[in-house]
Length: 176
Image 1 (cartoon, rainbow, N blue to C red):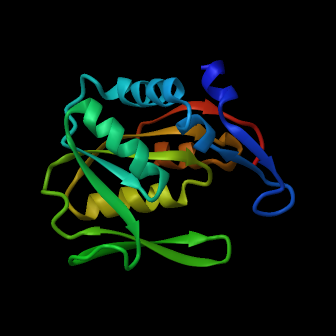
Image 2 (image 1 turned 120 degrees about the horizontal axis):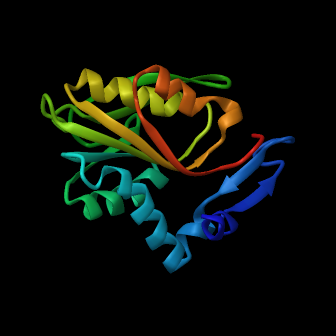
């Protein structure tokens, strides 16, 4: 785990002063690190029935596709508003200054399908919570959520637990 954590680059004061940005692109660029990351993200769900992985734009696409392949299931892209070509349903979520929307195709999930949420990082949990609501509204059952990085001080994983969603992160970092 420490080897993987060393592969995550920290960029101070990005996107604003006081923020320590955790850049996983350096981890994804390391062949062995990427392989180990995908294996560890998928492992808690290896024996759990999962019909599809829902990956949150954009790094969640990279990770989610690989986790779906490892689990032998389908993949559902969760995109920002206006990026999907078919009929969609959306879910708003709060940003620091305003509101954004994520969407999936309206036929992406069949009632009762078991869905695993995948993204690179959980911070405040706003996007992950929106994904939970979107999948639930679509009739899906969420089996869990998996991330590379948790920033526990920001409370995102705790927010998911309060919604009854089990989440796993491969590593955590203090601070923002």
